[in-house]
Image (cartoon, rainbow, N blue to C red):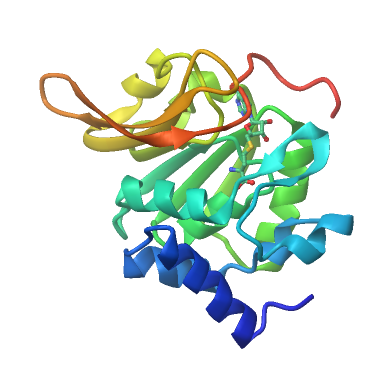
Length: 214
Ligand code: SAH
């Protein structure tokens, strides 16, 4: 299945109907072919607005959720962005069109390896993927202007808050269980953090340590 003009139009129409209005985000999503990030039998559903299975028992998020999270993150062209939860690499690829520099971290080495190959094949050379437990962030590259977490924690992890620049924004799902989670936008001020609840979402959990299955 190819990401042709008609499919792009339908894809963008679906995103707009879900509340995506930011033209920079829509342009970035138009550029990134989701089909490059989905393998096997699910490839033919790549342009549907639904999450799909990827390797290591993980999922590539629903495009409209990717779009709304990216919109909430309000990325500026000079920004250095950290994503926790590389997964397929789709979200990082979209961020790479909006930011100066993107770092993305996943606890599964295999996902990081595969995502790197896709970034390379798409010529995205401002994204770097690392295999690590992202709940500690990426201290050696901190501070970040923007942080996006695509796995759910009970609370915003302290190290990630610490690695956010003053004036910076972090968007993340938080929740006590797999079923009840909220998307939260955290803004760092000179004197503390401001928390805004955006919408209900459902993400895989943020787990500790590296994945055992490669
Ligand atoms: N953003 C991805 C979807 C992410 S799915 C995409 O665009 O395709 C969530 C990912 O978070 C999974 O790949 C999972 O391995 C990863 N993850 C969970 N806990 C983690 C942790 N502590 N550190 C890094 N990655 C983690």
